[in-house]
Image 1: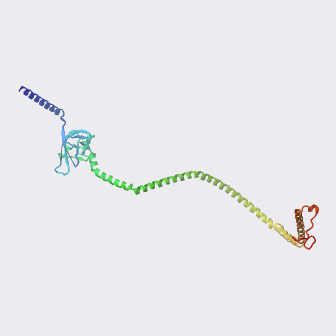
Image 2: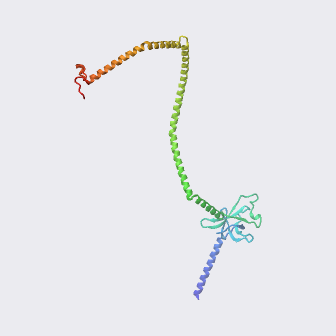
Image 3: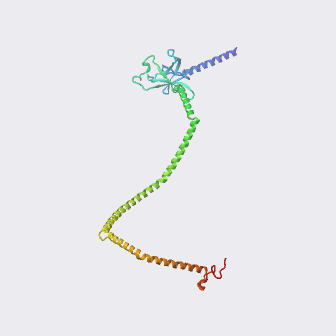
Length: 319
């Protein structure tokens, strides 16, 4: 019986100490700030948000989430009750978004202020008793809402890319690249030829200019010479046409030539024909003598041999 009383006392002591520790923990962790309740309303997906989640104003902790429920008066709208420090500058321009903490994925309420309009800087509680803070989609919500649209655009882009990279288009693209390479090579060759030809063109231009200049000088000299020759020819023509000039002398010489020709035809030509005949006869005799000496050289010392007897002459023998 005594053992049971000791065990009961020990159990009661443990329970008392546990309750004392719990009360101490509650007392130490109690929030002594003066809090003010606000209600957030919006058609936003609140996945990951739990009661007692943090409420931050521009990153500074200012309160907790007290409750989350659906709005019975508006389909698809959620209501979030938050308790915020009364020192937080909540005004009519304040709005709420859903944020996520680090890599843990824990959601919290982020309060921010837009550009305030005149009269929007007054505390929200002084404007109306049932004022609500708008709950707007955050970055993750916007990405989620636009994900389907982005996926559709990516699908369409992939289909267009597949059409672009079809076998026929690939062959066309390869041919176009080959043509571009050939054109680039031809352009390089043309550029090299042009660079090599430029000095020759420049030299040829300089030579042509020098030649043209020399030709111009020669043409000028030729023109001067032509003028001088024309003047001299005019003077010569005047001298030849003058009385007793070259034309008159040429006429007299022509008459003398005609008279001389008549004299040669009447007197000199018959005599000249006889002399030519004598020369031809002497030439034939000299040729016969040379042929005889070539056939019988001894005839130069012994004389010409006797001719062979002909038919009917003594000593003739038929062949």
